Image (cartoon, rainbow, N blue to C red; front, side):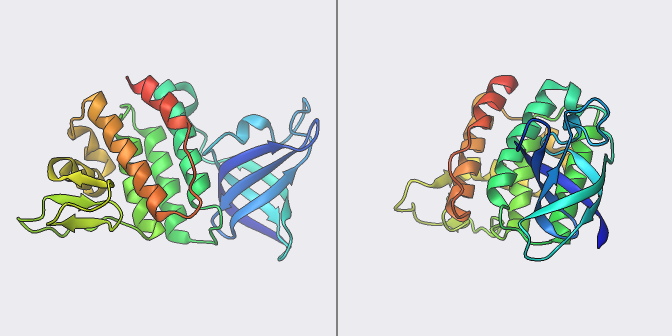
Length: 241
């Protein structure tokens, strides 16, 4: 049967001289692997530049249950990006966020709310004329809500530490090293709660931005099974410096 669905490209793996296997987070079926033939041929209908990290696509696919690799009938970019491929900060940010998403939602089934959040956030990044250097921080913290480990915002005056392992404020210093002092925790929560349109109002020095990102990645490691090491954030940090 043929099905129409939107998708978010996560990973493309070469299969042969002209074929690839693409892992796509689809709106209708969750994460699926698709064999696409002939992508490197001059007259290919589906080309490699359509299958870059976090590209958004409309698809017509064949879907068989209990099949590890599916087939694509049609695929086209939708929307066509206007800035992400041409802006070094946005494109590097997309590569980094793609790596985190790939390691966070590998076993994800169809999830309309998660899909809509990611899809709409990427559209916002592409459409926003001002390059937002805090976008990746806010995106990951907001994503945590959809992955089931959103930080608790409840705090009392005597709670001076944010425990990354528990995801909440504490009065006592945690016995482990994974925590934030209250001043840093306020930035952490502000990035979580502020809409994308306002996150540039949160002023961060490069050193502080790197620190917060490192803590966010620790937060993901603590709450995501088999998260592993993230490498692309080092390139992003260099670009943002």
